Image 1 (tube, one colour):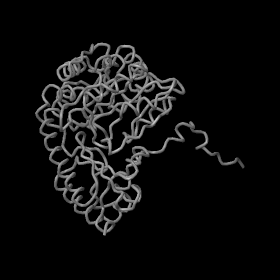
Image 2 (image 1 turned 45 degrees about the horizontal axis):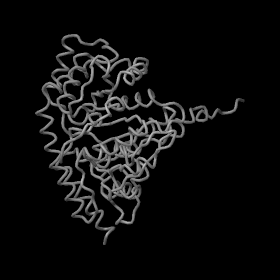
Image 3 (image 1 turned 120 degrees about the vertical axis):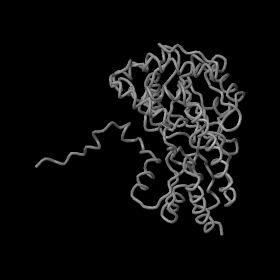
Image 4 (image 1 turned 60 degrees about the horizontal axis):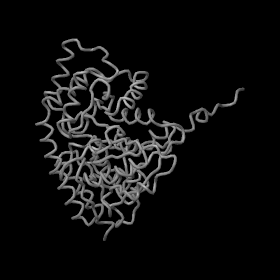
Length: 393
């Protein structure tokens, strides 16, 4: 009789050692329960604006069901280039410096695989989006986390950046506005980081998917800073600002060497983003600004509601100035973030994400998305307040 094969041992050690997403774990728990208010997943409660949906339907009616260029529809790339130049004054050649991707997640994966050799280090400010360390490891790189704190408004400082650099450092991720904290960073602060990046000849991967969701001040595009255009791989997309998460459409911009290398990988894996989603993205850039601005206005109102609610129930809470997440401290309850999140789900039927899902510096916090209706947010705050009052009394 043959011995039972341990198939898990046949897996790649890198894949075997990567933990599953902490966000998805709680999302799966919610799917098995009734009456739960979920503040866990960064999913806008808005439906994609009608003109964007209509453009997709019309493209299907016209029979647009074929492959596009590996780089994406030229018309869309031209619109992306115009949009970036109009917003930030940065010029990209749409023919060789922009690639349309299947969401920003694919763009991040492509960027990592294009630039990293085995053992290269990538500096990653934490708390951060869950995929950064995993994408680094899957590309053969070594994630180097740098802890940011509420006391410093979750911003990476020049001193922290320089202290983390070693001879093996290849790149640094700059991601503001931030998921999960909602932190933003000013132009002068970014310029101070840019000086160090240039001094040590590093590559920057700038994830700016939440750039339109900036509520105070102006967003600064990292590649617009002096000397940063050619060393920056700029990532962005349509999921958040235009309520297009399920369309899976993003893009990357950079010098032709970076983008050309990313397209080499893209053409052997994804080939191209779906043409229907690309047509929808084109409509978003042409005529979606009004709807996007209205959604941002409503997110801002919800941001203020959540900030007031958490502070009123006695929890310390950093004020988020971007994205659609809030990252309150739950240390006063005496629970760690995993205990708090699991007890809140079981006792109050509210789903949040433990801060450690975004790196160890997230301990003592939970992430709540306010991309839900005001009615749901008010009900969630009431339930959380009742749960917290029992721990603080």
